[in-house]
Image (cartoon, rainbow, N blue to C red; front, side, top):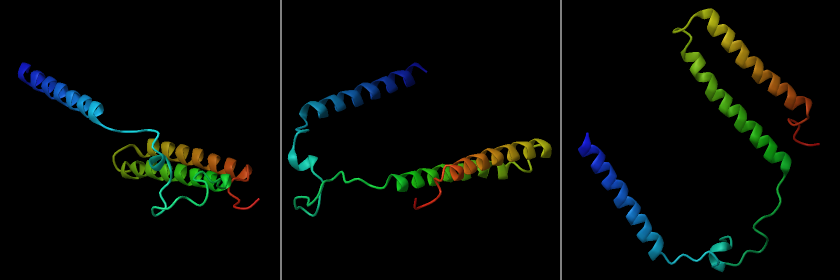
Length: 117
């Protein structure tokens, strides 16, 4: 046990030492004009890099990601179908789907699902 602790401490010390050496020896400049500007095939950019985009498109994207994560959360419920009590499984499944439907209704009520306003 003591040998494992000593070896892990040795690895931690060596890795920290290597990181400190790389930070000291690096010639990184945070104020370099070329690194701070966006890359467009080697030419100077024709417009600003921070052009505004549609906030509505961003909200649709966030809603898509939220429902995508919710689908990933539904998969374990399906696999647990034969392992748990049927009544408990039904209650948990209906509760989860009910929460999803409330969220969908709220987004629909706020007109967030309409592409154009």
